[in-house]
Amino acid sequence: MFDNLSERLERSFKILKGEGKITEINVAETLKDVRKALLEADVNYKVAKQFTDTVKQKALGMNVLTAVKPGQLMVKVVHDELAALMGGSATDVNLTGHPTVILMAGLNGAGKTTMSGKLALLLKTKKNRHPLLAACDTFRPAAMEQLRVLAEQVNVPIYMEPGATDPVAVAQHAIQEARAKGCDTVIVDTAGRQSIDEELMVQIQQIKAAVNPHETLLVVDAMTGQDAVNTAKTFNERLEIDGVVLTKLDGDTRGGAALSIRTVVDKPIKFVGTGEKMEALDVFHPERMADRILGMGDIVSLVERAQQQFDEEEAKKLQKKIAKNKFDYNDFLGQIQQIKKMGNIKELASMIPGVGKAIKDIDIDDNAFKSVEAMIGSMTPYEREHPECINMSRKQRISKGSGVSMDEVNRVTKQFEQMRKMMHMMTGSKMASAMKQMQRMKGMPGMPKF
Image (tube, rainbow, N blue to C red; front, top):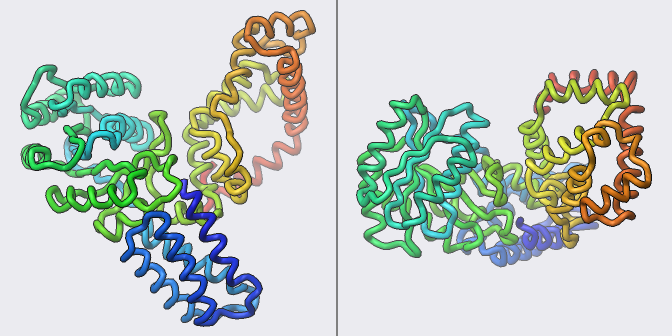
């Protein structure tokens, strides 16, 4: 995401490279290039102009410390203003009410129904909520069935009335059902259209008036750029939305919608969709997004994703197995599955500072683990638990059973043994030292809790 903008901004900052100090001339030249970069990223013209004017004013008003180069100062000013442009800080979803009612609105194709399911999963796993999905799209025949399938995937209840034609009544009945089942959150999926029309707006307004939602979220497709911004503006004028959910941000190399919506609509981006998996929904953090746009990575989000898949008890058991050199293919498979749950591999790698630029032209296949999983699936239970027993004849059988070449089987088993030895060496005094260091870091301000 934001690949094109990141490249252009990097080129813009090179104008100041080697300059001894910031002047009105070199700042103007740099910001002229920055403005072009923003416009190419499909950022609203007025927003781009206002942004560069603010950056210029702040850059010229700052004293450059001897230890700080002009280019570094400009990156700092642009970073802070990018974060401010996108809202400054994360805005939480309103979860007051018994039950809390969240109304989802948007056009067809934006991913509203899928996003309803993703939001249910996020609230369930991260907020310890008990959501109920309400299928109130009576306009699109497949919408109810789609939501039902998603509800099964994320294991949350759903309320639907097949054949119903009154979405207002369905929404009201869903809230009654939530109270009866003890659900504390109702996510109302509404109908969309290919474009904004009066019938759509009236219907959503009627639903909103009837259920009085605590949160009205508009789902828009980030890849549509300024069309997404215009859609948000129109919906907000008619519905008074509380926030925006941007979908397909992982496929948006420009970023115009993310950079313009807050200023144009004056509503925060609350969530962003970053992939097809149900777990691929993140709280939107403007300051972290500014880091990523400027190639600084996003290590905090990476740690948070890892922690979501981290089971402390399982980790302790695994540590004991590693200490006894008993780490086996069952454990290896478990670690692979946890990594896959964290999201797109290339996106995860790009969160590491300095890595994003290095891998931008490299195609990282999300199916990279498939051959390893197939190999482990072709092993007997005994072979998984006793890796040292795998000899040449067993490798030949594993190769045939998994459809993987012998060279690949030899490579993976060799790498597994090397990894196993290295992990065993890391135990004892080294592991204890590392754990103590982590414990000390837990108490440091701004550090994630391990």
